Length: 472
Image 1 (cartoon, one colour):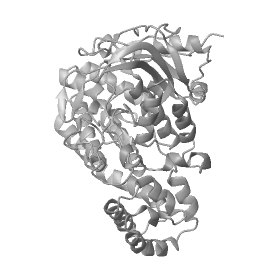
Image 2 (cartoon, rainbow, N blue to C red; image 1 turned 90 degrees about the vertical axis):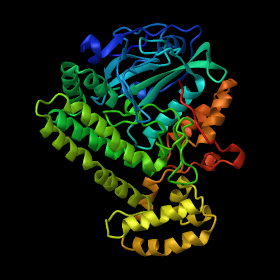
Image 3 (cartoon, rainbow, N blue to C red; image 1 turned 180 degrees about the horizontal axis):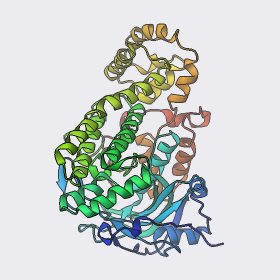
C-alpha cells in the first residue's frame, strides 16, 4: 500500500512573494513515533507501512501532489516588531480538503533550514515535538480550536540546544497558518497589492460571509474572543502570544512554552523567556486585543480613506474586551453549574477565584470537585470555601441540572506540566509508554478514568516545573 494524501493546494498558487519554495531537508534515520489515525481518516489520508510513513513525515520523500514551501511573515515579539520572520524550521507540504469539507494545511515542523531560518538550524528536538503533539491533541479533546498533530518522527540525528538532544519532526495540521504577522509583513513593506490578495484569500478561505477587510477584522475578533475565553476556562497559558503566533483562523497555534496551571493564580507565567510577565494567564485577554489592533493597523493600509477605516477598526477592536468577558462569563457560569444568567453571577465566580488564589487551590481539581461538592479539600483553609459555597448552593437551587452542566464543563484530566516533562525524559531514554498513555487518557478528558487517577494529581514540591522553553 502507498500512502495517499489528496492534496489541493491554494496557498502555493499565490504570488511567489508570499513564500519561498523549499523542500524539506532529508534526515539520517527516520523512525515513526506516532501516527494519528483518527485525524488521518478525517483528512482522507490512506496510511502506509510505518517505514514509508516515517520517510514521508520526516521529509525524506515528498508525497505526490505536495508543493512544499516556507511561508513569509513578520510579527511583534514581546511587543517589539521584527520585520521578517517566516517559517524558519517548517515547510508547508500542501493542503487537503477533509471528509468534513474543511480545507487544512499539512506542515512539517523541524524539517530543516529555509531562507527564513535566521542562522537557526531549522530543526526541532524531541521534547518540544512530543509536548506539542500531546498538548494540541489534548486541546482538541477539550473542545478548544487548535492545530493538531498528525505524526511525530525521530530523525536519528542530534540537535544542539542546552546540550545534544535527539532530533524529531512534527507533522502539524491547521485550518491555515495565516497569522497576524502574515498581514503585517506586507503592510510594513507597503506591498498593498499583496496585502489585498492576502485579505481576499483569508476571507475566501476562512470567513466567506465577511465583507471586505473590516469584515475580516470583525470575524477574526469574534473567533479570537471565543478562543481566549476557552483558554481561560481550562487554565491554559499560551506563553508566547506574539502576533506571529496569533492565528487568523482562531485556532491555538505554536505550542512553545505553554502550560496548564496547577494551583490557581492569575499572575502565573511559565515561559522561561517571559521575564516581565507580559503573557501571564490574566494578561491573555489584554494581549489578544493588542494583537487584534496590530491586525487592524495592517488592514487599514489598503484603504484610500484611512480616517474612515481607522474609525471603523477602532470600534471593532474596542468591542473585543466586552465580547471576551461575555464568553468568559458564559463558560465560567457552566463551570459552577449555572445556565441561567443572573445579576451577581460575575461576583460569585470572581469571589471563588480570589479564594482559590489565596488558598493555593488546584484550578482543574477544584472545579471538577464542585460536582461532588468535595472542592473544600483543595483549599489550605477549607472555611474559605465553605463561606463561598453557602451562597453558591443557594444560587444552584434555581438551576435544573447543575451536576450535568459541571461535568461537561470541567475536565478531570489536563496535560499537567510535570507529567509532560516526565514523559519527555522517558522518551529521551527510548521509553514512549508515558507518551502513548498521556495521549490515550487525554483523549477523554471529561471521563472519570479510575486507572489514571495519578494523572489528576498536582505535582509534589520536587516535581513542580517553574518554566518551560520554546523549541527553537
